[in-house]
Image 1 (spheres, helix red, strand yellow):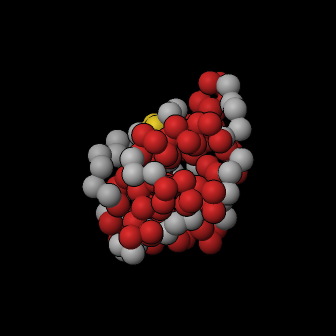
Image 2: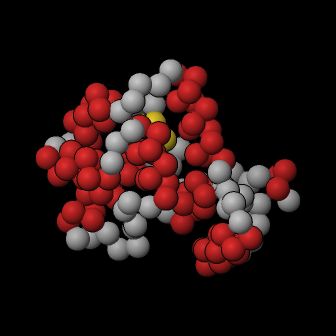
Amino acid sequence: MRFKLEGYVHLARMIDKCRAVLAGTEGEYIYPCPMDDRLMEFAGITADQFTTAVKANPSDEIVAKWFMKTAKPHTPAELNKWSEMMLNRGPSTPEKKEYFNKLRDAVDPSRTDLTAWADLQDLEEDRTVQKNIRAQ
């Protein structure tokens, strides 16, 4: 999730998920999910536009170039602020917090320090997630 493609967090993951859905191999992936929706809304594109671009372009680099040409322009400061929001965004309701904890506990119940969806995704996909000592 923290990897940036053309300056956007989540773009590479969204391309992967879209490709998996198109191939019928999505498994537990959900595309478009709320995080995908947030990126597309920020960029001013629709899921249909994005899916069409992924379907028509064989490489992530070509999709990323299409995305940059099609997306609403943002200053580097706006893009950085949005990326930080995406990386730090946690559950927004008690019900979503309960769901978050259920997903976290299925992977590693000892990680009660996690508060962000991005960290949970990284944990689920076996990427190293540093301990959040402020949350404990």
